[in-house]
Amino acid sequence: MSPTGTLRMLVIGIVVVLVIGSVDSAIGGEWDLFALFLIALGLGVTLLFRVESRRSAIPIRRDLAAWLRNRSAVSGEPLTTVTDRAIATFVERYGAVTDVEEARQ
Image (cartoon, rainbow, N blue to C red; front, side, top):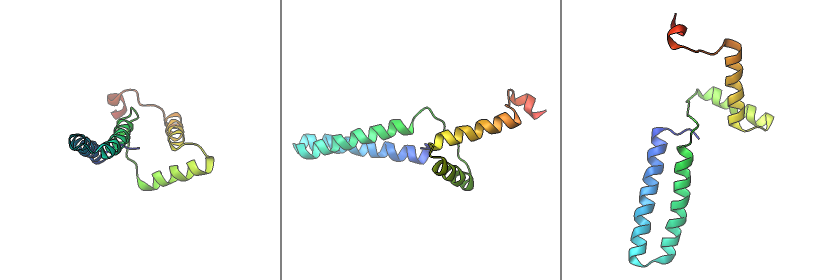
């Protein structure tokens, strides 16, 4: 998942609403609703941690994303594996940039 700022704020908003709903249902004594809010809160927090994972998000053009998805479907490999291999092949072919100043010269 590519954690854009909009997606991140949307998930945080969902988690905040679920916290408020769970507190309100606990105060009101609606225990079945409270349990439902806690389950949804657990799912929301899990999604938030997934969005904030260590893997960086790099936006790419739609046609390249479609190519990656199609390649993943054909090979049966995860999309991240196909993406990593495509970038590694590019680096192997054109060389890694070790210094930004050196690359500009």
